[in-house]
Image 1 (tube, rainbow, N blue to C red):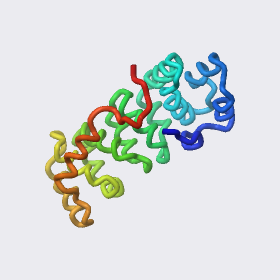
Image 2: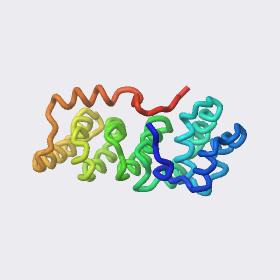
Image 3: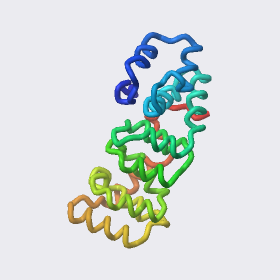
Length: 195
């Protein structure tokens, strides 16, 4: 999957470097994020380079992101952050309830990431998820993930069920088996080597 550079919040200077086949030492500098002007740009670049064909560059980009603390990651995200950046953060970086809540409020959240967050959500996060009606309508299978989450209070599940019924969007039980098949393991379209 090819993500347009602009969607990753990359500056023209970084895009020019990437498109001009940078030398190995320059690729390493890019992977550390030292050439970026902000963390918003740095996170997009590091997620992109985490799947670089040069394993050393890819590992450096992954190491750069794993060294960030929760506050730095949260501050680098915004409502329009690209879906694959959000997915990478949820899949490969250290779990944080505050981070999950921040990511769930992003408008580019994809279905897989929404289901991963919902499946591991605390009761507080489940409450926040139940208030995000737009995401509930975009990904109604969240209902099954909330119902299966042992930490989710029954009243939250009931509220989500009522809302989805009212909107004629309550998913059937057969959708649940499809959801389980897609929510297990890394997304095959996420071209990132995690070794």
